[in-house]
Length: 104
Image 1 (cartoon, rainbow, N blue to C red):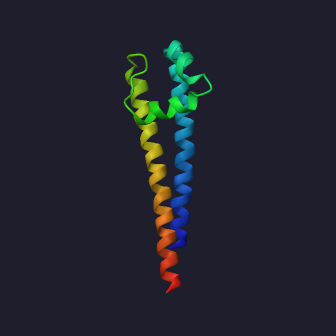
Image 2: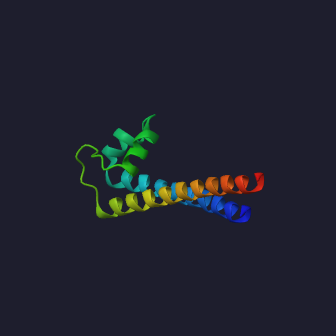
Image 3: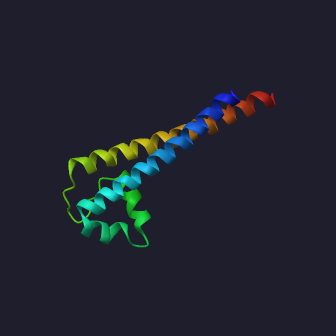
């Protein structure tokens, strides 16, 4: 069971890094297509805050109409982050179950 838990942990970390790389590609695409939106929201000190809002919510950024490619990439990045979080939660749950089994 610990080996399976370790595999879920490694999968979660790998998915997180993959989502982060895809997120950088998304920000680069926004910078290329909508430089004003990039300058206003993503290049400031709180760019990370707006990044997470942009990824996980349906917030409007200055009533901008983003291209289908940006919206598709945004949903893809969000799914990767959610899968990463799910793998880490499964890892923690498997560790707890393993600890309960071995404690008895």
